[in-house]
Length: 215
Image (cartoon, rainbow, N blue to C red; front, side, top):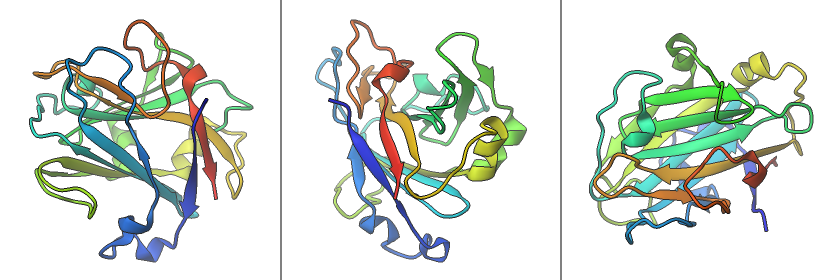
């Protein structure tokens, strides 16, 4: 059964206040359907939105991290990485975006209908996401010990550039999935929020996306 996540609307002025994210519901990336040799780092994501865009915050309780890739659109998924795949307008457009960010904020981002022939989003356009990361700190109140988290924003103006027919507002339904991976780390692992039924790890499975609903 596919999961749903309701994205809470918030006041933009409150986003930077202490404890703001404590009030935002979390979606746990707790499905590890493939052999990960027992390595399944506890990871979750929280989303909210304002009239201007989506705000995304991941946290991964991962004691041993790797970060080699530093340039936009390099292979961030081979490092300690979290991913957000989203189709903002699924009933009018079957393309989706793949936001793949490693633990130092390197972003791989493309748009397309599947794994092949994806259009990469240029480094210049990626500047609007304002990605920030923190390493080896307890960044959220319900976690202890080492980990890393990442925060970024997806402006609705950016989404509308690629999905021209979209009308964003309360009740709008999107589709997507959240992932934790590290293809080239010491302990390769592949986790997802909405479960994927496939023999081999494959995140490019839009048929397995869950619902993301704006409050």
